[in-house]
Amino acid sequence: MPHDSRLDAYPEALLEEAKVRIQEFGLIHVPTVYIGGGTPSLLGPAGMGRLLSGLGKLWNQGIKAPCEITVEANPESAGEAFLKTCRDKGVTRLSLGIQTFHGPSRSEVHRVGDGALLQERLRLVRAIFGTDFSGDLITGLPLQDERILLQDLKQLLAYEPGHVSLYALTLEPGTPLASQAMLKGTGLPDPDRADALWIAGRDTLEQQGYGQYEVSNFSRPGMEALHNIRYWRMENWLGLGPGASATIIDNAAGRGRRFTVSPDVDAYISWSKGLPQGAGEGLLIEDLDRLTLIKETFLMGFRYRKGPDAGLFRQRFGLDMETCIPHTLTRWRNQGLLESDPLTLTKEGLLFLDAFLEAAFRELENRQPRLWRAL
Image (tube, rainbow, N blue to C red; front, top):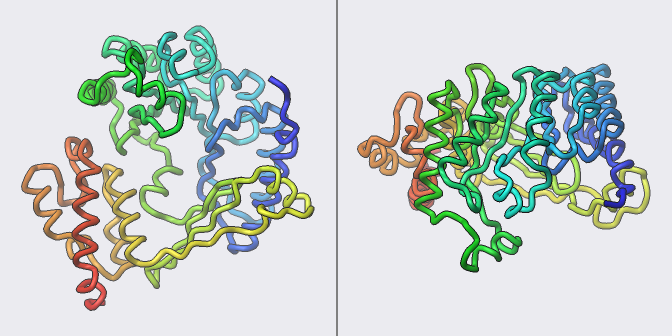
């Protein structure tokens, strides 16, 4: 594969944007950092080293340093030098995209590397990061059955990751796999079988001491992903890089703004160098009204096993969740799928999250005029 010269310029472009946004938003503390949303390991040891060193300089210039720095990595591009660079430059947590060890399933979803490579990289990660890493697995893959999934889990857990993400396969429209799924013989399990596979994986993880603290995330006690918890609690976050977004909420007003960077990589790099940037100039700004923010708070918060933060919700919106969707909460509570203290879906309730949110949004929209009059 030919080298993409933009990878050489990308770390400096990110650092330039970081400086601009820190000043623009008046940041004095960055609680967590997550370097992902693609394949950061393609930067290689040198590129990642420059990025992490540059971020380290920001912490030395009056910005309170984060307590957690996570880097996503694909096994095929996360060699020993890359992993050691991450650890030496302050990364506290690695997220490794395993997906599956099963060769035929990997081939069907066009994943590079085989089981032997995955085992080698896991040995390196375990040696360099200890248990401070997460392994991603996917259920519902082509040619996958329960035996294969449980074998995947057994192989991953042998390296004692502190965290495991277990995702159900999602077919995105327009992707090669989605097109293949229209044809017979792809080996994809039917929906009921796919659901049963995920549940079998969940149950196995819990039996091995990994608590489910979010729909797709499991961890040993105290090893939850702090960065992701900020999303699920709908706290402020700042995204850097093409296509990334930031969400800044005004708690007093119950409203917010979303700032999205243009996805044009070339324009983004030009902007960082002070060159004419065209589509890369500035940020796309979207105002988030009270209704939108409440919906997003439910959308993110009910994924989390602790549920939305009731105190933060009341502070932002001047309302209790029980006031916003009383009938939905009563129905789900009566079905044994919702707990009250804290207000959260049960383990089985999480399996029906989409149905719960659909009912909650419908009731919220119907009650909206009365809710705003009460404020």
